[in-house]
Length: 488
Image (cartoon, rainbow, N blue to C red; front, side):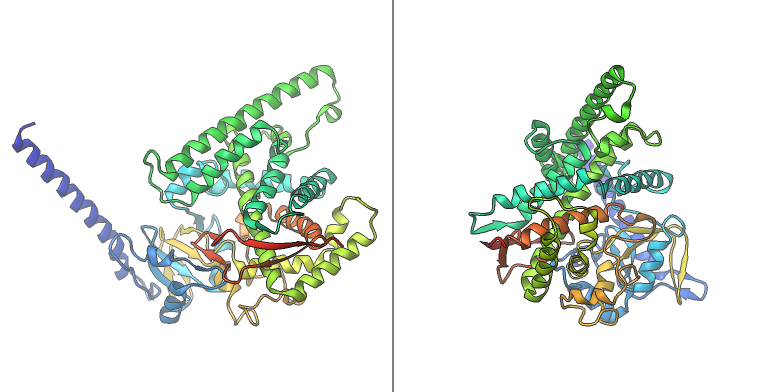
């Protein structure tokens, strides 16, 4: 290529770059001047060109606080303000009423709208990003599976056996990294419940290795460049999908063989996991079934393990709450025979344990905010949310609002003896048609694990350890806890 041609090619590249950046800046700042009739946009600022205020919004802070960004913007602009986040003009809501309105109008006025890189890693059929009829079909199946599963003795026994196995290995340990142990526990529970695999099977090890790679990419910088965590995560998802498809095919072959031997299908089905039920669902495609399995693994692994860590962390800070939890579980165990399994009736007796779980979610804020998009111009009070804008309902804002919860920054599980668990002020699992369908399973796992933990160990946390919002929540050092084995 001649020198002249190279020069003009360089000029074209520079001009294209200038045009692209100029368009991004124009798209960013033109909404500032939007007026619709007598209403206006909420107050706020758009920050830096292109990046907007995204970096400040994502700045790490303790998860039991709003963080400097939200505190500053709420004090200056009010609980609802405009910003520019994730490359989009955005309405941020820390208002209880607006948050509830947004969550209850999913598919009507607002729609789930996660950043495109999330779609790339979860897949287009994931229930977490799907919208419309696809989401309705996936969620309907999830609700049915949870309803069928949650009180089944086999599932409850699996949870309890896994709890006992994990805690048995702690007897001679002075310290454990709790988040690591919790993830081990939740993965073993969910992989057994979803795929019927035990911890020592080769496929379980393979799925766990790929799943850990997948999780690292999910919270990484979304750059699809070979060797980056994001690129490795996309490949890990492909491998997990292939493994799940192989398990599905093997299960179908087994079913054909069993059906050939006996016409009584109810007696020949040796598995009672999610996959066995999923195979009979005609409303989902093959890819949707695979995505459903991945969603189940993701929700049952990361969210539940983090909830366990929150409960253990906050109980260590509240000796009186821990003592009441101990008494509750001792009373349940006292009327049972030695080594007798817990059952659904026992779970329903764990009332104060449920208060502790609620308070850990309120204080810890596992989910800080959710991504939505306005489907049309929406009027709220005296301003408008423009069609096409991103909308971020900040769930943690209602949880930590002192006007909604007395002594909001204090861990006080007794508040739930009088406060309604199902209300606008408390939405740890989201709301409306996108409320987490597996929330009850997570509560079950935490309660059963806690039953054996409080009756066999005392523990304490390190003074400077705390949950941090990045905005995904994790403990700075994985929550090390010092143990003392003291079976009752």
